[in-house]
Image 1 (tube, one colour):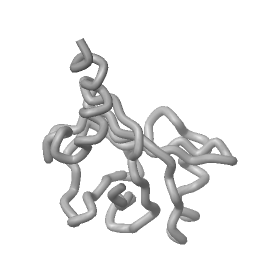
Image 2 (cartoon, helix red, strand yellow; image 1 turned 180 degrees about the vertical axis):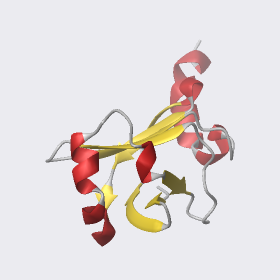
Image 3 (spheres, rainbow, N blue to C red; image 1 turned 60 degrees about the vertical axis):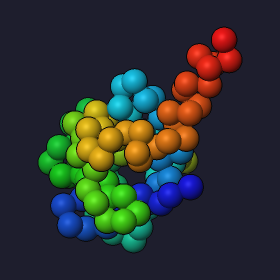
Image 4 (cartoon, rainbow, N blue to C red; image 1 turned 180 degrees about the horizontal axis):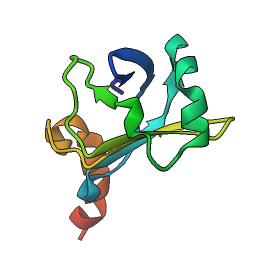
Length: 111
């Protein structure tokens, strides 16, 4: 699986494979692996699950292209940390996550 890089402004705060998704909604999510700089935003991610726009979170593809989306959120609940990327528009969802699309379409193709 690909490794996506998560930034707060220009600061690398972690990575994720974004191993799960909802193609019709344009959502990808997965386990978040913090980088050293995550410590600078961890308190906000742990206490504020509603509006993290002040952190200016973004996600970059393995090739370094920033994913255009409606929003990014880090849900830090202590034991596990999850990253959510909502409303992915460019690059196209199917280009970024063909495995999510294939998994979603599989039941329809069995008919």
